[in-house]
Amino acid sequence: MESRKAGRPRDKTESRALLLTHARELFVAKPYDKVSTRSIAEKAGVNIGMIRYYFGNKEGLFEEMIRDALSPMKNQMGLLIKESSHQNLVDLMRTYYQAMIKVPEMPRLIMNTMNMPADDKQRQLMEKVFMDLARPMQKLIFEKLRSSGVIRSDMDEKLCRISYISLMVFPFIAPPAMLKIHGVELNEDFLARLFEHNIKLMTQGFITPTPYEGTPHDH
Image 1 (tube, helix red, strand yellow):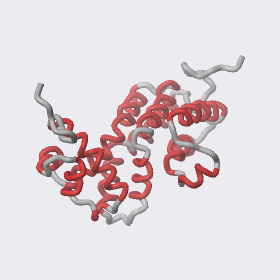
Image 2 (tube, one colour):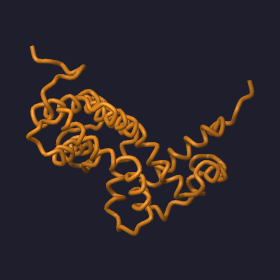
Image 3 (cartoon, helix red, strand yellow):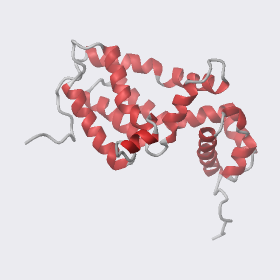
C-alpha cells in the first residue's frame, strides 16, 4: 500500500470536508472580510483550486459551511412538515443538540452574524440560507402542529415557536462566563439531561401531554 504524507488529504472528498471545517474555524475567529480563501486553503492543507472547484468562491464556501451545519435540522423539519407528530417535534430538538455539540461555535456565529448591519455581506449570505432552509418551514411547522393537536388549542403558535427555539438555542449562545457561574459544562451528557428536562417543560406547558417514546415515566 502506498503511504501518504501526514496531513495531506486522501482525496477530493476529504479536501472538501477539510475546507468546510477550517473555514468554520476562521470565520468564527475573524470578521468575514478578514478571512481569505488562501488562508482557508493553507489551514486545510489543500490546493486553493479546490475552493473554486467545490464552492466557486469565498461566498459560496461560507454559504455551504452554514448549510452543511444546518442540514440535519433541515431533514428533520422536512419530517415534521410531512407528519406533525409529538415524536418528530422532540426529535427536532434532539437532532439540533446532536448536531451542534459537534460544532458548538456555529450558533454563536449565526447570532453574531445576524447582529451585523443589514448591508453586511456575511449577514446577507446568512439570511439567504435561512430564507431557503428554515424560516418558511418554521412557521408552517407550528401551524400544522397546532392544527394536528400537538400544540394545545389555547396556546399562541407564534409564541410557542419562540419558546421552543429559545429552549433549544440558549445553551449555545449563552456567554461562556454565564454558563460557568451556573456550573454548566456544555457536553453531550449535559445536553442529554437538558433535552429530557425541556420535553417535560413543554409537555407541562404548550404541547399536549402525550408521552413520547424514550421519556422516562414517573413510577
